[in-house]
Length: 170
Image 1 (cartoon, one colour):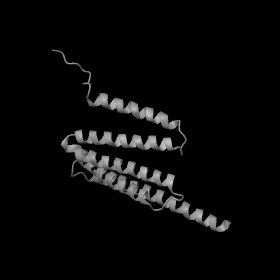
Image 2 (cartoon, one colour):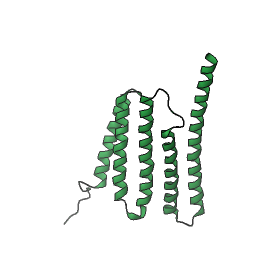
Image 3 (cartoon, helix red, strand yellow):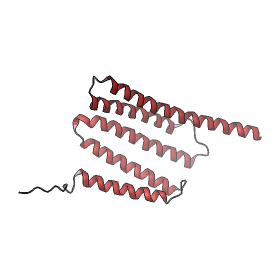
Image 4 (cartoon, rainbow, N blue to C red):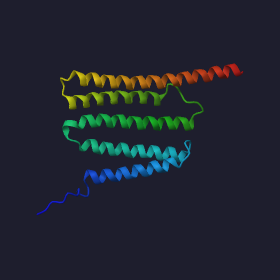
């Protein structure tokens, strides 16, 4: 009996290609909408929720040996989407965004998940006794923290400059 090389109908390649096609369609739709459009926000955040759900399904189907790593990266994705939703809600409903606010705290939390996931991945790939892999993961994690610090300081500086400018114009 000959075995077909084609994947089974419900296997990962078919499911993954369908998800990729939907993601590409979503991207094309987002390009056609104005940045401040409520439809763009709803479409983008809805797509983020669907992608988060898909990543959870993928993570839960991973072998036990790597499942924790994938669930850590799922935590990163889930909290990022939640932070985006909170930020968009605040941006659309409040006159002035709180800084630091709930969205900022959530974004900071994601970097912990990213760093832990990278360390776990480096340990899995390189073994627990590889010092270089640990140093590389620490460097990547510090770079992520530096990026967060830079973005927060830019927002603080922009807010300070805005209040200074308003004070001078009075």
